[in-house]
Length: 396
Image 1 (tube, rainbow, N blue to C red):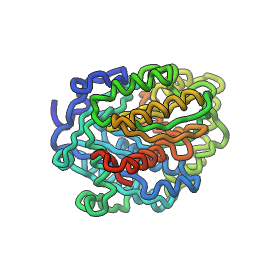
Image 2: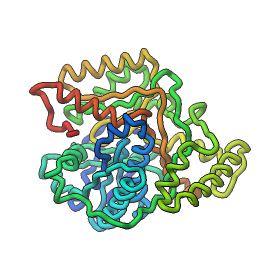
Image 3: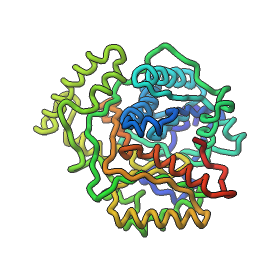
């Protein structure tokens, strides 16, 4: 296995369980680099009702890189108000330029300041962390990376430290990123059981995660990592369309820059064709509606592992109460830290890279702050544990 082909050559698994953390996760090569980006003062933007814009910027970081590099080679994790990617050394320059373009676009188009850095894995390992990866197959040709080792959390601390990040900050660019395929045309996905819950769980030791999940499963009545029929959000009555899509103007402004009106008109035409195919069941170009809708349900990141376990779940009031009680008990016992945010719907931002080849992924997050607010809650709970602050706690 060459260093460049490390991720593409990894065998993929078709289950999300975490039972074999030692055997299933492989350390990335020494010369790889973490590209990390997140929005400065994202909480202010969320409180101003701009979380759809926040989500769009975070997804754009991933789309910009995958549009210029081979998606099969690049592990990534979407974080709501940002994203991280792990890139081979030979592709760092192209990835950094793409993300720097999103930094400029975010500031100029939606007025959100995106900070971004390229941090070598060797430096992260010198800080005591690691990046170990597993490849989870959503559907043929579509994968998510599962990452442990606290390396991403160390990268997050560096990114948010004005002094520590200076050697790694990405240079500004005047070029525009390629954001083809980035869209947000589905309406918010409403809760069917009462609450959409965005939750972050970080065990003190990675090896404790399977045991923690057993206790969470007992409270919920289902395993959020393996009970696919229960945890999928992007299907059935939750999926709603309107014309024109409420997020189309944002999509056009972000994807087409100064040519946003042309992008908006193209989006309107595409939306009409999609609605026609969706409601008639007839194929339109590369879109086969029944096949696409089945894959849409599968190709979402409502659960992810990026040093912490991040879940977006539809829970009843009773399930939510049990989850809170269990997580608080784990926190009180010093076994895990957690953060949680509750809303009445979820948001979905889509990246359709090649519909003809069925390559598309859909980023799911809770509305009104979702995982970004859960991270804020996580940090507040860590700060409240006087004298017990673990090394993995990220900064603001």
